[in-house]
Length: 263
Image 1 (tube, rainbow, N blue to C red):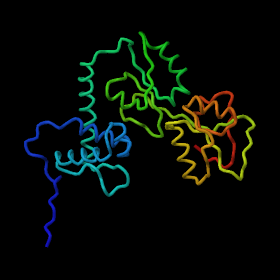
Image 2 (cartoon, one colour):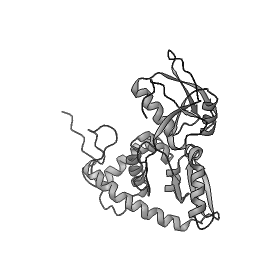
Image 3 (tube, rainbow, N blue to C red):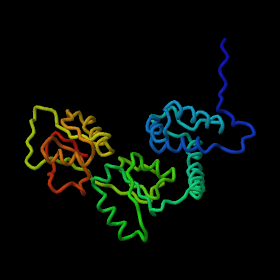
């Protein structure tokens, strides 16, 4: 007979006084992003390191925090309680750490992703001019939520398919639309031509995922450095793209190709 290995998460570590906040932050980030890969990227570590920290936290707390029988990233009842308290603890921790950091001489620090800048920068600047009593600075970032959590930003504006952060002050839904050059004719026998930007953002990832789920054949006919280049390429008739309907450039038209799934 081979003796069964004992459950190392069955009891909490003895004489524990403090829980490492980095382990709690890893758990909260994993739950918010629903992906070990995305959490690893957001935290600047490898995926195995994320898994190791979760395992260590489970050993310290004496029980499973993730429900392995559920698909994706799901919490056990104990995990839900830990995450609820961890968010409050991390909020206090980050506030205290922020007190030790010198404030930026530029005043309010606003982070907005490149993708959001291409469609929302004008309205954001207008709102800042009307509502901000002092100076402010717009900062680009490849991960504004990470920078906000690390105290490098005072305000973050992010796009996402779902609520990216439970701590968001304001959330709203923006309808998406397929856009193309006015009068652009498609070859119905060929794959749909898409314009993609390097480091594609949330809108592009959502659009390509919808196409893949619907079984619609598509190909990247043009790749450009960023979101602003995408709009120019679409206007030139090089392909179609998805964008926030409310901020669609006036020179572009709504694409009505019947093969396009609803966003």
